[in-house]
Image (tube, rainbow, N blue to C red; front, top):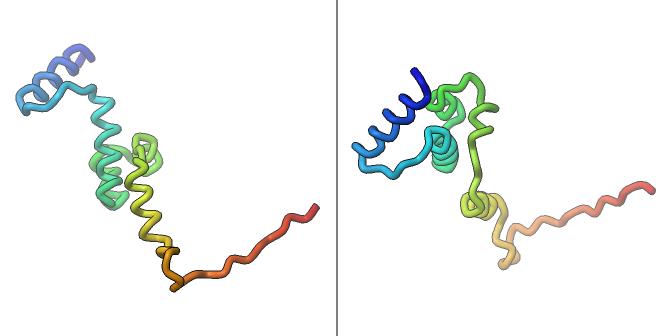
Length: 95
């Protein structure tokens, strides 16, 4: 199928679904990013994308700062209270 026919059919389907016009390529990036944001297992994300490896799916995945901040907040204790504070060891480089 020619790319112009693919684009025509894609745009027709988007319009019928009441969705805004986006390229197929943009939709792939969006799908990879949204499935990652939803914490979908890698094997499922790879299958949905039609890829054979997670590395290709990750190529299309873009992490947003809000999601990263949320994950970081879950991983690191609230430093405003004095509980669960871990002393850090200072490591000096050899000159």
